[in-house]
Image 1 (tube, rainbow, N blue to C red):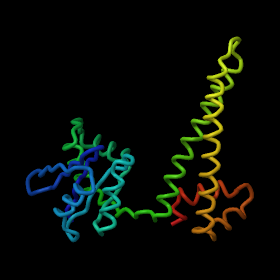
Image 2 (cartoon, one colour; image 1 turned 90 degrees about the vertical axis):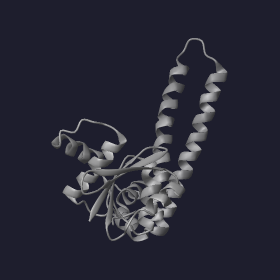
Image 3 (cartoon, rainbow, N blue to C red; image 1 turned 60 degrees about the vertical axis):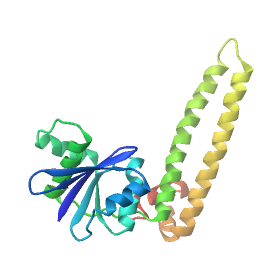
Image 4 (cartoon, one colour; image 1 turned 180 degrees about the vertical axis):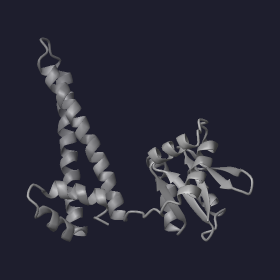
Length: 216
């Protein structure tokens, strides 16, 4: 098995192809067309792709590789960081990072990543937005309270903050309800088992199901 290291950025990704001596380095656009060009260089029986879990920029590549049946592993950046220390690697370029991932794959031979279902991917997106909205709600509520204690108050500013809080609360309720409904429909058995435990309601159960991929 040949392990290809892939370093991903917003607009491109760099691939390190091991050869008898050293590596061949190629860069592709981080777009569906660029990913298709990359896949044309692959052999399903020979190649195993190694990527870091570094956010949304690599999700489309991961999804397309998995969908087409290519071997791909998703590595926690902390593991590759520690691996780099053992190699005394200090150079930080896209090409060197791709080479490092290739060497990591060759030495560790990590398992093939199991892509979550579409339902779980959708639930994860909703929960990410939900968490961010909750943070914004807390921030704006604190701002509202700080405005209320000022000796001279601007009503327009207070009204603006109040309207945004109301809007965010509406979106939070809608997302929470939608996540619960999806969970009830797609993971009814898991939801019933979880909510039978004292202290676990639909909200907590939905979060657990999302985080564990339906306990798969």
